[in-house]
Length: 151
Image (cartoon, rainbow, N blue to C red; front, side):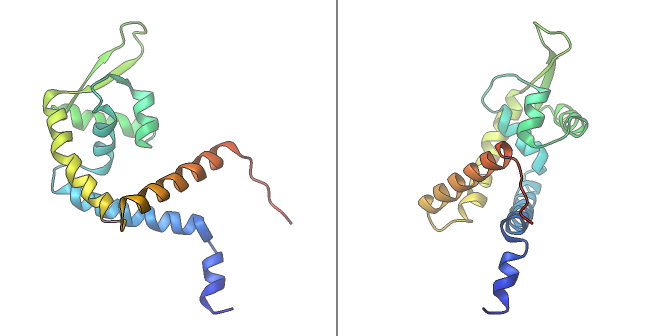
């Protein structure tokens, strides 16, 4: 066993995923900064880009943000005229958000930049697909299974 082999096992996949998340987030941050957005704003815009109105709760879940943080992000997007919000027609307690025409154009302008960051991570589309499938499966397993510890 080489000196690096134990290190690969210590931390394993969780450490690698954390390191990857940090590296990709930094690349995204730099690319989005040039476009006048941050990563949280991008995630919200990308979720809303389908043109449908979405609830704050659904948007928070997609954007991986706690509700108070999402409110701050949406406030910034509203002040930049990229999204607007309205109360729900069925449930007046519900807040729906959607992109404005300007927000949709911003999404379309930035989508290519984000895609180029994603493409730079993989040698081929096939590699990317395999990786995304493996991550999706691992996420599904992590959410659905209980953790057992062998002692």
